[in-house]
Image (cartoon, rainbow, N blue to C red):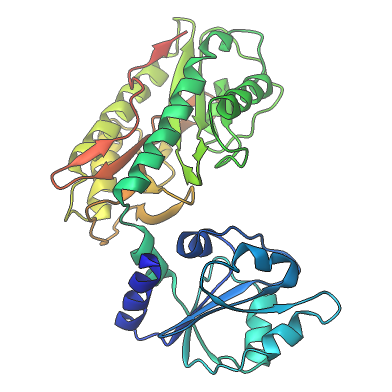
Length: 358
């Protein structure tokens, strides 16, 4: 229960009297158990000296041997009765603003558990941002699965294949090579003009000669995610403007990775990438932040974004993914998963960053 001790220390530093945690990555991180948000609320209340679950009776076997106090309710009683049995009064209560729903907030207030509720995102971020050596090993395996999977089907990047067909084959390979079926996200496969949309959803467009294809994909290994993007070329006669943009993105990726170090502001890493792209006169086509944290969630703290004063620390993991997206022409993105060692950033990804012609 080392993580429980850590979060209590962080909770005290932020002057919180308790936390209310709902199903999601924080609950999984703290307990090792996975629940789903549903019409039957599950809440873990963490206080200075106690940790109490309120959950449906049918879910209690998941936590009965973990050492937590717990209160159950059944479908006949309804969850209101379960929360009525929890007679704690918590002063300043922290919640996960991106996850908690009205159903939980309303019952917490209605049962007078707390009326002093605040966002505790910073507490959970401080807990999970620095990755342990074990977590880094799991993330490295998630990267390896993703890389092996894409390399095994590059021969299918050819004219006549549709985006959807390639994405489907990629999913099969991810599962075959060891990813859990709950992928970090559905693979993005964007060819030709579709690559100007950073989050294009694969459709029935067929790959054509002399166009670029953005592929953004990841694997899930024991709950930890990878998130990789590479841009490929079918044919040799790629538009010269896209080739110029590719060179700028490649250099921006390298510049950001070189700047990313312990003690550096996240905004400085973003600026390093953004300046390269702006100097190449493609600034208006770089429409998103340079990166985001990665781990049990596909997007988590720290966020590598403009003007961020957040100071990067050892063990933090995040993506470096500059991109250029030119309407009616195409796009480029190169994304690596990196972690911070004592001295610099280390890339978990090993795929080539130079444009690969298929």
